[in-house]
Amino acid sequence: MKYGTSRYTSIDTLSPIAGMDRNGTADLTQLIFMPNAITYERPVNDPLFSAHKTMIKSTLSGVNFTYYAPDDPFLVMGCEVQVI
Image (tube, rainbow, N blue to C red; front, side, top):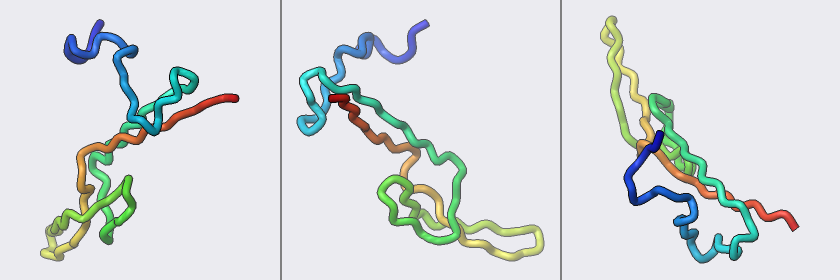
């Protein structure tokens, strides 16, 4: 079973950015973070978990709560491991 488009048929086509290119002597890993329904009580300035979208939720008793939703639907972080 194949997922994705025909453009991405082989992992060998990955071209890392210049700072992560070790001429094939390191393993590259991509971590995908999907915050989904996570919300915060205060804005978050962390680069990975940033949340600044103001949301207001009302309870059945009429009380309004302000919370903050993630800025992006997903984020990708790259990690390079080289064993010497």
